[in-house]
Amino acid sequence: MPGSMSRADLVSDLKASLNDAAAVFTAASDADFNRHLDHAALDFGRVRPRVLSGSVTLVADQDEYTAPADAIDEHSMQWGKNSKRDLKPWDASWPGALPRMDIVGDPGARKLVFSPAPSAHQITVLGATCPFRYFAGHKIDASAANTTIKPDDRALLLLRAQAEAAKEMATRNMHKPVSMRDGISGGRLTGTPNALFKQLMDMFEAQAS
Image (cartoon, rainbow, N blue to C red; front, top):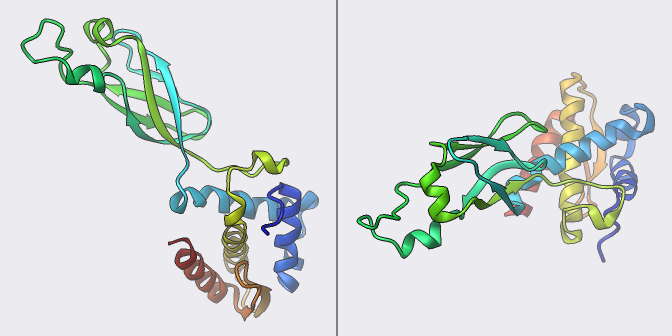
């Protein structure tokens, strides 16, 4: 049975798996280990995409709208797709080419950008409510129920967090071999941080496929 997906339990198991390498990370309140897990969760969407639904109320000739807070990238826009199938280009209600929707900007301040901006005619024909799907970031929460990574992928998440820890050790120019237990089998791994990072990432990619 997979263990708990709460942040505290994941941090505890990550620290234990790093063996002597855990002593390198001394920030208060386990900040280093929390960072490793957060970076791992950020990369997790690459191998386990999280697709959510949203909607926005369109305004004629307005091209920018606030994106969902957890949005990373656009997936698809459903606005007008079904309605347009029932119309012909010679119909007076033909909406023309639909806008492209993109999600742009920095995390926490991302925007939905429609190109070109929806026209008054399009909104009249297709309605102002624009449903869409988007790729959302994974998150690790204090409550296991709110962590978005599935319990079955717990070991894979820990493996990716271990790789993040090894990468940080390598960037600190640490060359002394360290020992840790990989997140999948619990097997002992020993090597320089740079070598362990590559080995752990290769294992992560193989297990995620």
